[in-house]
Image (tube, rainbow, N blue to C red):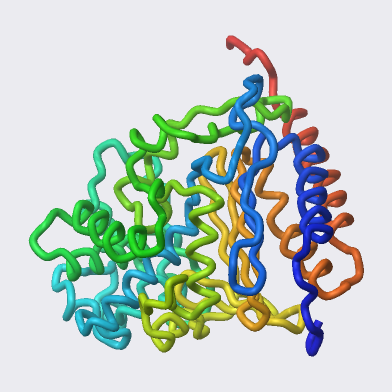
Amino acid sequence: FAGKKAHPLDEKLLAVLKDFVVGGMKMFDVPGVGLAFLDGGKTVWAGGLGVKELGKPDLVDADTLFIAASNTKALTTLLIAELVDEGKLRWDQPVTEVFPSFRLGDEATTKQVLVRHLICACTGMPRQDMEWLFEYRNETPASALKLLGTMQPTSHFGEVFQYSNLMAAAAGFIGGSKAVPGKELGAAYDEAMQKKVFDPLGMKTTTFDFARALKGDVAQPHGDDVDGKVTRARMDLNYSVVPLRPAGGVWTSPRELSKYVELELARGVLPGGKRLVSAENLLARYKPNVIVGEDVTYGMALMVDTRYGVTVVHHGGDLAGYHSDMIWLPEHGAGAVILTNADSGGYLRRPLLRRLLEVLFDGKPEAEELLRVAAVQRKAAIAKARERLVVPADPV
């Protein structure tokens, strides 16, 4: 699509995109989707498709809350960019200078980590998720950071894309401690995000507070049962993200997440004209730190994808029963947000990105086939897994 001019997302094209998502929801039995589309740097449509919970009539709308999971990371790096503007941090500052107790399992690697490396997936630190996933009831932000000191890097700096939720959590908590000194790490981060990100952007219902979110206009999680049928899921596992919430703990709606994407498209300027963050430090987050794949690099919690000849910035999020994505084209002022309340919703993300590009640039229609192939593969995988199970279990 290089060199092409994007079509404006008028009512007709928006209807095409919404119909595409509806078709995908039927194909994968996704109960509900929160959706927003942007054009000209502004949200042109935000709303919902489907229901908040299977078997109940309440519809998803523009203000329904979903866990955005790892999309939280980009909001965290926005906070850090503001702190760099304020002189409270530097991108090239050693983390041990900012936060002396910061430790990885390898002393040499610890010394190399700069602020910009905390959410770069480039340090060689492996994923290391099992401790906090299984032991979260006893975890705190402070203990989550200590877990970093128990793991050795498995590759060199910049050598391999290795996603680390614990490193991302460290970024947020360290940033919060610089923004709000003297408070417990989690409380400092929460307050910093509220004052420096959510409030300025008008994200009034976006929150890290599970109790608050679950009392409001909220989509319930869904997963696959033993036979692959989508059913209401439990929330339990999602509480595991609370002790490392800068990596994935935010609840937000399609309307409010699209406000964040508007800021990205405006290069740090709020709708009223006030600058929230400098363009220099906003865009520093796009600079490649490690290669993800052909024509795809990872900056600071942002994927930059040029495989289609145009720059697409995006990031996904995944927790139990919730899968989401946010997508924008900086050169064309267009984008999309999708939040889903089912594990099968993850299959909609890449096809939606492709379909958005097809609509914008008269592209060859490939997105529908992506959905169909994924549906066939999913069905086959479920059937294969089911063959291995005895239900009910053999009592012996």
